[in-house]
Each structure stands twice: as structure tokens, then as C-alpha cells.
Length: 254
Image (cartoon, rainbow, N blue to C red; front, side, top):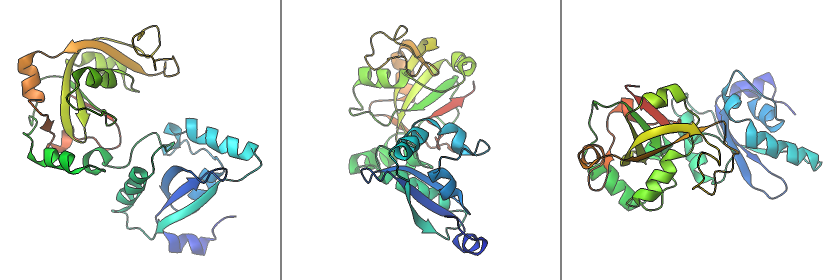
């Protein structure tokens, strides 16, 4: 099944879901035009597009469905979407379906994604993060944090493990942990290493499967640096050049 040229023209931009027929779970959200939804459902790889970052678990799921003698189901969730709105529609759906195989979160999800009332109050009432920090920084999103005041948990989440440039990371003086646009932790990285169980023996989930990524060991930033970037309850990021979009990692001065 493919859309005709006439149908493609009428659809314009659309956002779609890929669904596993074995259990009805939505496992991927995407945006596209023309027949992109059929290509994705069939597991066709578009190395010129964003598929090169989403090959792993999505294609594994598609292969498992096909090996079971079934076909991936798909739903066009919204079509005729203006160019300026398609990223927001896709992001809202990604936020609404947990456990997706999408590698990256939705557009601006960390900044405008789902939050409870406490997170919203903090986001818009906390002190503002410095506009032009003097240090070389790596800002990393750790949105799975349960307790924003548990410094040990913050450290363990922010130090392991990321698909980033090792040379740039090693130039950083500080690693800052960010949750929904609020900086909640500041650490001095002492050593960046491959994400293996040998390098991170104190982390039970460091099983070597993420060895192509890196993490670091380090210490908490001293009090004056912590106060500058984190403060008592966190500091909200206001400068556009410091905010995260889809990539969980942001460099500054590195």
C-alpha cells in the first residue's frame, strides 16, 4: 500500500504512530510527508534523514513483528500540519506515549514537556541561570530524576552515559545536570571513559551494552560554584543558546 501523488499532496505534513499488532503498543512516533510512514513501517532506512540515529530498538521491533508473520500497524495522527507546527505536534505525541523506541525526545520536550504544578512553579519562579557563564560547561538532561535534592542520584544519572564527543567533553570544566530546563547539579569531571562495567563497577546497570558511549567520574563542585549555577533549589535556564532542544547534551565554551 502506498499513497498516490494526489493523496500525498493533500496530506502535506503529518505525524504518525507505528503500532505493534502483537500487543497494541505504540512503539514509535514520527513525522513526514508523502509515503514516509510506509517506509518506516517496512523498516526502510533513510541514512540521509534522522533514521541513522534510531536504527537500534525500532528496527529490532519491526523485525520481531515480521518474524511473527505480522505487519506493523500505523496511524496518521494528524495531517495538513503547517511547517511551523509539525515539530510541536510530534513532540506532544512523543510525550504522551512512554516506552517509545525514539532515541530523542520530542522537540523542546525538556523545556515545555509534561510537568506537574511544582515543576512549573519552579521553572518560572526560580532564580535565573547566568546568561554568559565563564566556565567551560557540558549541560546534560537527566529527566528521569525522582528526587531533585538527592545529590548522589543526580551524580549517578548525569555521569552515565552519553553519545557525545569525548574531546569536547574533556575540555569541560563542569558538568551540569538539568531537569526540565532547571539546573539541579554541578560536578567537576575528573576522567571520561567508555561506558563499560569495568570503568563503572559501582553502577549495576553498566553492563557494557553502552560501551560506544562515554561517562565520567568526578566530584561535586565546590560551594561557591554550586551556588553560582544551582543555588538552593535550582536555577532555570533562560538564554536560548543554553536551552536543550532534542539533543540531551549542550556544550558551552568547549
